[in-house]
Length: 268
Image 1 (cartoon, one colour):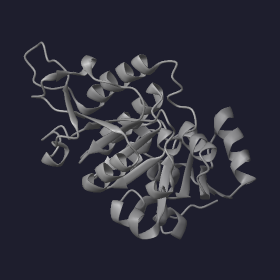
Image 2: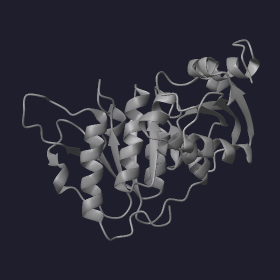
Image 3: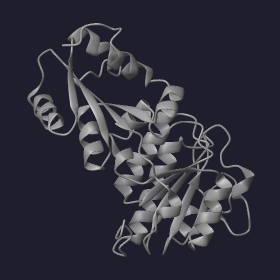
Image 4: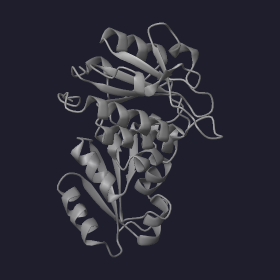
């Protein structure tokens, strides 16, 4: 059992809370039984797992046994494991994995593809919540354009309930995202507060991309061209906007409802 905070495996796990360390090492840290199982289902390469030496739930013990057949598993003193795990959410297992690498140039979108673009998202929890919504609404992919946060930040993994491992997530510039969408003949709908077109009047057929901006400043001017359709969510109260995940939910579920039955997610 690992009992020292100076153990290299413990130190690495703690360091992976830092974005710079994740980028340099190419590794990520995954908390939570559901999140680890979804990483496994998504084909993520596990490097090792750190398991609390204390009493585990039946679900945690079963996962620990399954992990032992696939990767290295190290037992860690309970008090030390609590330092490694995410806040008070220690379920007894933390996994270290290779960062998923998704190359949009290698991905062929299906004919009825629904994609969501999030530009300049600042909070990983917001980005993770959008990924969770995208999965629920049947979207095929998420593009993090001009990303200011890591889609595989522990907060993003947690907010998505591990669904960041189940949907393709591409990180690229807004300009590159638009060029790729045009090349693949997507209709691009951009959520803009001052737009004259109500979101319910837009065309959601075929390949559709819905772009949303940051909560602080909305979409950049890059998304305001004649080839991109601006749409708005009407605000009927005192507020002038919804938060990012709420706006994504409203637009994606409306799109999913309109597209129901057209095979929007087939061929993912």
